[in-house]
Every structure is written in C-alpha cells, then in structure tokens.
Image 1 (tube, rainbow, N blue to C red):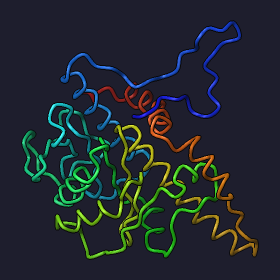
Image 2: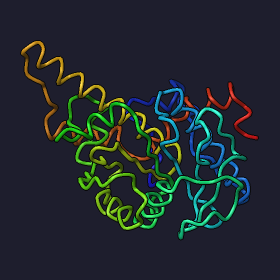
Image 3: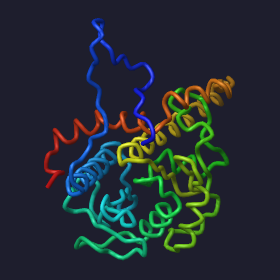
Image 4: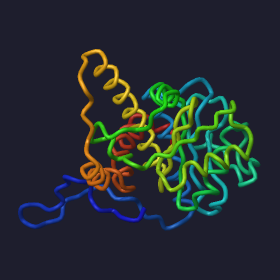
Length: 274
C-alpha cells in the first residue's frame, strides 16, 4: 500500500488539536502472525461475498500471497460454500499450480487465473473473482464501467477488458492473457464471464470487487431507467471523474472501506479464525 492518506472527508484532528483514532493496516512482529491475519481476512472476504449474493455454486475464488513464500498463494477449497470457509480450510498453491499445504482439492480455474495474475502483477497481494449477477450481465454487453456515479469513479479508466471467451478458464495460457488484459488496472471485465479485481491486500481486492459489482448493477439500472423514461444519462466529466478517482480509488481507501465489514464478520462469526 503506497499511501495511508485518510479517505476524502475524514476529520482526523479534534478541536483541541489531538489526533483522532482511525483504522490503519496492522504491523506484524512475525511472519506467522501476518500469515494468520491474511488467512483470517481471506476467510472473512468469502463470508462477505456470500452475504452479498456473490456465490454461484462452486464458482469463484479469492487468493492472497503467503508472506513467507510470496510465489505461493492461499485459495478457497473447491466445493466449499463461501459462508462456511474458515482460516484452517484454506489451501496453499505454488506458482506451478501444485498444492503445497492443505488437504482439499482446488478449482482448476482458480489455478489457471490466479497463478497468471500473481505472476503478471508482483505488486498485487490479492485477487478476487466471482460470478456476481450484475458483473455477468455487464460482461455480456459491449460496454465498460462508465462514470455515472461517485462510486463508479473509483474505476475511472482503471478497468481492463478481456474479450476472448473460450469456456471455463483451465488453460494457463488463457490465464496469462487475462493477466495481460488486466495490465496495471485494479479490475478487468472478463467478457461473457464476469469480473476480477486485484489489490495490495485482501481488504482492497475484496472491496473493489464488491463495489464494482454494485457499480455494474447501478449502471445497468441507469440504462434501463433512461430507456424507460426517455431521458438521457448524465455522465460525470473527465476532470471530475479523475479527481474523484484520486479521492476514492486508491489502495488505502479500498482497504479502509473493508474494515467495517471485517469488524462485523469477525465479531459475529468468530469461528472463521479456526
């Protein structure tokens, strides 16, 4: 995370000049503590996805690099419902797609996509992909994410497009092409498939996916409403969209947005730490 500048609108100083508390990324004394933390955040991300209706049978996967062996990553076991995943259920996979820790099978598509994405983006710690209904719908249309709302501006000129749908992604070469389409962006639309997001933490990657799915839903609703009412869409201008992206679309802002979700899930579902 390159900056921990408070999100736009944060008042971090009291009237008497004292600093006010605001969540910041945790620092760790040992790699074991950091690994446990990353795995707990990953388990919480799956539970968030489930609550948001982003689970579609056995489809979908979120990954995070291991802090001790960053060429390996932790991923959800194939066939386990997102709402039930605990830290101890996660499986570690190496850069060749081989399971090096854990007892459960993994999704071949997760291996093909995430091995390639992590290899293409050494700056990324986590990647998220699920088959959300709005993301799937938008991916089937010849459109990208448009600056129609403040939240949409987090993705302004920051979403790649992978146009080459050939079925379930099981080929490592296709995974590589997804990594190319992602480029330096925080998200990529997978045509006729869905969406994928990345971040420098589980927190930001998961939040970017959730808010991108909601943004897609708002965009589809806006188009439908405009057509039904016979009124034009009102897009945010280029300069304003760029400014807003700088306010809400940077990595710490994404990390920070996930913290209330993390606090609620970890409090209500402490078994995720098992």
